[in-house]
Length: 137
Image (cartoon, rainbow, N blue to C red; front, top):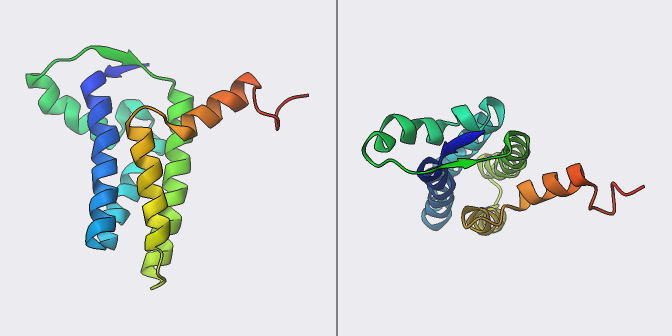
C-alpha cells in the first residue's frame, strides 16, 4: 500500500517525540497517548493510522511528497509489538511502579524505528520469509 512519504515520517517521528517527551518529563500521559496511537495504528492499519490521517488532511495538502510502498501486514505487526510494549509501560506506570527504565528502552527502540531500522517489521519479514532459526524446517 502506498502512503505519503512525509506522512510516514511524521508518524514515525511524532510517536518517537511523544515517547521521549514523556520519558524526559516523566509524564505518563504522553506515554499513554503514544500507546493509544500505536494501538489504533495496529487496529486500523497504516492507511488509517491516526498520525498518517492527521498529516494527510493537513500538511500533505500544502507540502506534497512522493508516495512510499509499505507492507501493511508488516507495519501492523510492528505497531502491535509497539502497542504491547508501550501498553506494559503504561500499565506499570499507572500501577505506581518505577518503569521509567523500561520507557527509556521503548524510546531507544522507537528512535531506531524512526530512522528506518524498524525491528518489528524486520522480525515480521524474517518470520514471513523463513530466515529466522525459529521458522526454519
